[in-house]
Length: 301
Image (cartoon, rainbow, N blue to C red; front, side, top):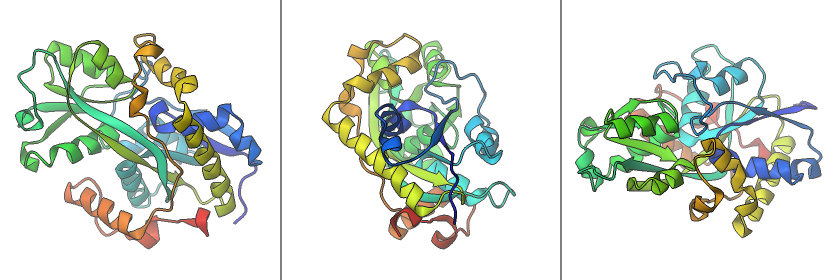
């Protein structure tokens, strides 16, 4: 497989893409001999994001549309979201993609309520609406966090827009709780809101067939180098996250201890079995997919 000379690499929410942003800023991709065009798409962490997210139209969202039209070659998002897209793209006759790595950005999500709420533990959210992004990290991670406390039929999720808009819905009482990622968890803390539960959640990396194994390996080495830099001192790069709040959060109020990044890794069969079967259990992906058809660890071959 001959790889493209110019690689189109997606950037969306900074918490998911921080190693990519650091690798770009510090020239780590260039050090690997890569010629990359960075394609920015709107994400739910950004105050400027205005598009409405439909539950049943994931491939019509900006990043998915850009990929399907050939404007992006490689991207990452929550592991379960990548599984759903990699499995269902063929069934819908869309541009194919494979899972090519377990990503290195381990984003934190938190379920947050008002300070005057009578909710102090996850069990108390029984039959109460939690605002999430459908079929993206906040949705999947909310289910993961809540299923240890409530039976599935008592876990209720809804959609209320980007992180800023769902916080507005929380303040108005339109929803009882919201699922947030950074920098919005830190912002919620500055507003005195209550964190009920939080958890790290891993990205998965997706790519089209146009990128060969050695090219992907070089891209992942650059991300791994960036993760090492972030582990030593993330503060020079906090501005990427804080900027998404449109001036609502100051850099000194961002909680850097939540940041967790590491090198991308091969996506193992055991990981596939666990993640895919869990997603099928929640009726969030079609059945019948196989590891061989969806996963391609060519970066490590």
